Image 1 (cartoon, helix red, strand yellow):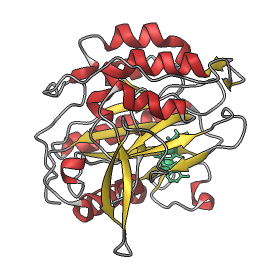
Image 2 (cartoon, rainbow, N blue to C red):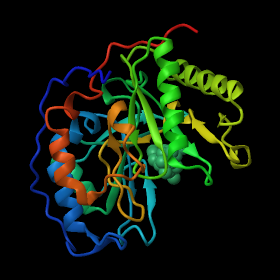
Image 3 (tube, protein in one colour):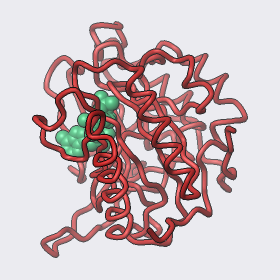
Image 4 (cartoon, protein in one colour):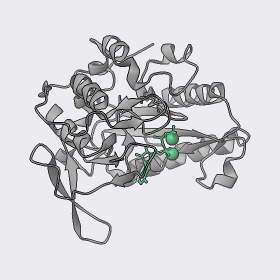
Length: 301
Ligand code: ATP
Ligand code: MN
Ligand code: MN
């Protein structure tokens, strides 16, 4: 049942020459992760990560003093990342343009880490055509009282509902509190169509099973439920990218898994930055083909 998509065409550049300052700085006090360990993690994972991370606009969660201190979400360039980090001008709602960041190499990733980046988040589209998403994502955000079994069951239900309309989806542990269900798309429909589809899909589930789901962002609506966050699918929104280390206690990793693996996993942070060797070996020969490119298009509903 674990269908795999096609392998991306170009192998990326995967070793880094970027110098990391303050290598012993503690990034996560809980796991004692240091900046040099984080850099080593991203350098080793670059071949596995770049097929998804490369060539799309990214936003960064930067925590220059580690995740226990001040962090900020950076969407545009501050002009200080060096020449391994590229820019693409993207039109904003108000008609102005802003230089968004993108990378295509381990050097680019490590230049971000050197600047205090812990998390990489991506647009759901490539710089080649930012108006046409290559994925749709349902971000399952459980209310605090719910257990991971509830989130797993919700993900399975979404998978089934998507399959019923002909769409293959893949689960990713967020490394935080939930699961992202990802639907790879052929870059064809534009943002408004994908957003509208995602909203209608989430609202239909919320109406069919209001005891378990809500498609409403308001925290009060979430009581005892799972928020099916469809808002990741609007132009300009981002979602955490595969194998990113989260700026959270314990340094959980956003990990793509298969539907059959999910059955035996008991936490959305089941993998952490310490599991580098495990992540590398389980990725071998598989994760490069896990979502990849797709010919899926959204059905008319
Ligand atoms: P969790 O499983 O704990 O919910 P998550 O990555 O899904 O982890 P959310 O809070 O649900 O976290 O956020 C969903 C996405 O919204 C993030 O992956 C990120 O790309 C984006 N996001 C998070 N913080 C910001 C922010 N300050 N500004 C803009 N977008 C953000
Ligand atoms: Mn979430
Ligand atoms: Mn969310």
